[in-house]
Length: 341
Image 1 (cartoon, rainbow, N blue to C red):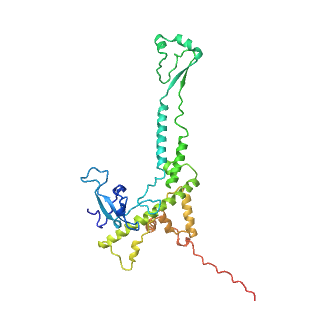
Image 2 (image 1 turned 60 degrees about the horizontal axis):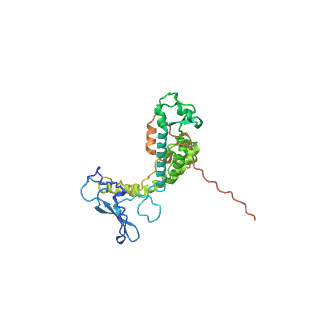
Image 3 (image 1 turned 60 degrees about the vertical axis):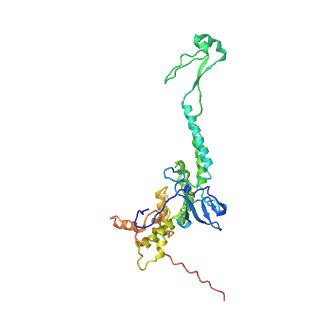
C-alpha cells in the first residue's frame, strides 16, 4: 500500500479479534493465536486476513497469516505473569456494571408506571347496603362504576361511605442517586479512574477533589509509562531509522546520533482544580529550587523555547529577571573541634 508521507513507515491498527482466541495447539506451542518458544516468549502471531464479523470481502473469514513478533506491538493489560492475552480494564467490575444497568432500568420502568396515575374507590362495609340501593340498574348488575378523569375533576358521584384513593408507588426512588453513586465509587476504585469523571459529579471541597486527583494520577502514569516503553519509544525509533535510511534525515556533525533515539516523552497535562493555587505551588517550587522553570513549562504541556520566543515577541515581556532565580548556596564546612592535648 502507498505511504501517506515521504517516509516509508506506516502503522496498521488491528483489533484483538484479528488474533483468534480459540486458536490453541499445545503440540505447536500456540496459545490463543500467539506462537511461543520454549521459554514462553511470543515469537509470532496468527492474524486473520479480515475481521471475523465482516461479510464484505470474499474468501474464508478464518484464513490467517503469520506475522513475526518483531513486526507486531501487542499492547495489553495483564494481571499475572506469563499472561498471553490482555484483559479489559473493566474485568473486575463488569458484573457490578451490568447489575447497575438492570437496576436503573427497573427504576426507570417503575417511574413510568408511577407516572400513570391510578385511583380506586374505598367503600365502608357498614354502608354497603345503602350503596347498593342507590346504584342504577346496570351498576347494580355489574357491581362497579366507571369515572372519566381529567385535570380539575370533582368527584360528585360518590355514594355514602365511599372515598377516592390514589396508589402511591414511592417512585421515583429518592435514594436512587445515593445508591448509584456508591456503586460508581466502587467501579472507580476497581478501574483506577475518577468517580467525579464517571458520575459527572464535581461537588466537594478543593481538598477532596485534589486527593481524588492525586490517587488517580498514579494509575494514569502507570498506563502512560507502559505505553511509553511499549509503543511510543519503539514507534519513534523505527521512525528515525526509516527517515535515515530513506535519506530524508541527516545528522549534522557534532550531534550525538544516539540522542535522536532518546526523546523526552512526557505524560499529558494533569488538569487543574484551582488554577491560582496550582500556579502558586509551581512558583514556590521554582523559587525554592525544587523544579526548574523549563520543567514546569513542560509539565504544563508547553515547549520552553517556544514559550520564551512568544514572551520575547510580546510587548509585555513578563519573564522573570535573571537575578530572580534561586542562587546556589555553598555548603558551610563543619566547625573544627579542638582536640584535648
